[in-house]
Length: 251
Image 1 (tube, rainbow, N blue to C red):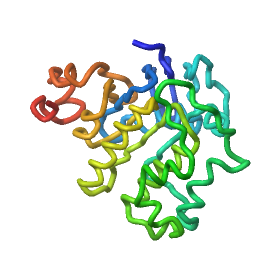
Image 2: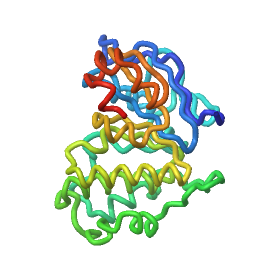
Image 3: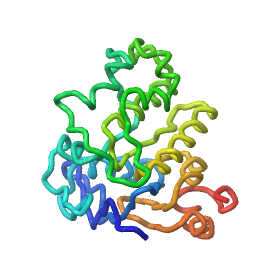
Image 4: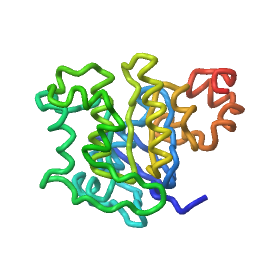
């Protein structure tokens, strides 16, 4: 296994007095996809927020590219090369597609870093529109005028404009028609080929397992399984108790 790009070590995250993440650890290497699975309310989105600095852990450490993110504000973590595709898309509905895409390149955003070698794709405005031709056709439309699928493409395209090494994706298939779920699936596979690492939180089990290299199952703020898709398919207790499925639905 290559050296991890991201290492999460025994983090404990709270919302006020509510103890959400209770010693979560994981590792993710460049060019790999790690899926975080679990029932609703188990801490998946909190894990994304903890890594991004939006809800920092009280204890434990998060190391990215060999450096601790402890104490860094969210904007500095984004400048380090971590981008989020948030749950619910959260595009700027009053801005045009063009304006949404250009936000990560503004003077308020991170300086553009050159690719780190390998198959890394250098994303710019033209390259993103090549990847998402639907957005090129709607370039001057406001975000509010886009369909749910177009808004998700815009959220992913906006993240790519920052040229991240690590992309945090929180429920990217939520509310999408089946054909658009397949498009999101293909996008994630291409991003992996380009050298991006993806930490994927996803309720759509079929989608998550079709793209994942590594799988973590979280329950009540703790990791209860880590391993491969094949290993998960054989762990009937985890599948039944924590995901509510049988092994036949995984393979």
